[in-house]
Image 1 (cartoon, one colour):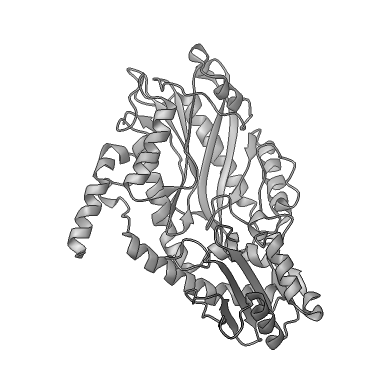
Image 2 (tube, rainbow, N blue to C red; image 1 turned 90 degrees about the vertical axis):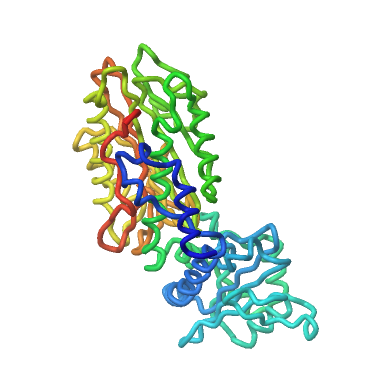
Length: 456
């Protein structure tokens, strides 16, 4: 398709988002574009080649593993192998076994499969050796590795992708000396998943910006008619808008409201105000005077976003939100600063959580922190920094250290009394995607520092 025609199609596709939707964000002419599927695949395959060249050798040497075997069958893919397949492979085919071998100078890549697997050349001829696992055993014996990593983990589900039957078959195929050299590759698998490359980070702001544009479009008169539109209506509006743009979500959008006591809503909303995030609020009609919260994420080019923002529905005659709500959002921004200020290479998620909560308490901020890694998955591998119901630390996931070149969803809330609402406690819930370069944290596409206003 000619470039001019493609550009016009993108403008037509994004036209419903402008201009009112972005009055408080990026101007509509700067709305992020969306690539056709063929071009997306080319980008993702280019990123995969760069990731394999740069990340795998460094991680294998960091973890002291000189062979890494990843095996999966169609429809039961290892979460790691799913991130190593070519973009046109939507699943593993039959049984796919990928092998990395580090000889000290270079890391060899092989596919023990009936086909080449993108950057993994085929290393199995079924005519010469009908038994696929026997061929794996031959490759192992030929290279004599000292530590053979397999994806098993009691802590990280994303690093525990080798099924029980596949592990039994691998062990049965290997001779005893090599069977004894099998080790869990937990940190290797997590490292592969959590590490972001320069190529990815050059584009990640575009992806997060696209998600923010969609959020802002929904938090406007384009999607909301006060007194008519329900929170469920808005959630499904987001689903439809994402599909119209040729994108997907990795979770159903969350939408809820908090409101002044005289208009108090559903029990689910009250439960959230009291801190029970397992509650799912009933559908509420969005009314003037409501504080609307949206939790939204997309998947694009293999990278995920996860963003929570808040908007205030103006009452007749109002031109701004009540001062108490403005102060609450500012307090949530302050806790973000205290949390990201606690990031340091080598600190565990639990240590970061404890330091951030201590600093928040010292400033009399009633904070709850539940921050997680993000990247190739939404709730991704890496250090968990609190869960909403585990503010004393998270055993296992929270004990993992923070590494450089990783992305995190800075997710938290602050509870504050709002004078204009009769002193009612309101939770100001924010989530913004950020990148840690080993020294500092920066938001990938900025953060919300002012309430969105409906209408605006």
